[in-house]
Length: 217
Image (cartoon, rainbow, N blue to C red; front, side, top):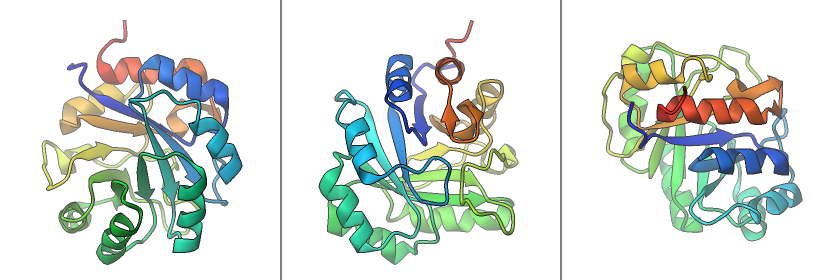
């Protein structure tokens, strides 16, 4: 397994887990601005966490169908490197957010079957990165972070116009297999490094990053 795999730890809420993710070698840290999520952080919380992140580790704000007022407030207060749009934002909205904030934009796209892959082609033309996630079940409150995987063979060694990151149901136990099956060079985890919903675990974070990078003993 190539150690060039980049890892995103999403849904961080505590300084000790931010530190654990940085120490483990994560390349991205995600902060969730979505009140229905157990991983939600306030803008002041996120600012306090983000200022402690060393240079070279990307700070990502996850939002869900956020309007300009919410994005303005986040971007003015929190030192960010990327915006992650995890709702039903249109291709046009992705382009608008890129223009307005001058930050790279990652667009999450839920996948359940082959019919969902066309959206990746469309968003790949405007987004700086794609997050290929498991589509949430019908009626789900959360658009992501549900601990669900999809059939990884659907995207095995696929390429789009933008770099992509694999998400959905990844854990320290299955991330190496997921990378092998899909050819992913980047992976994202949230619930897979939690002992209980919304509460990260430093040991699981370290184990996940090591497994993803092929460093697990």
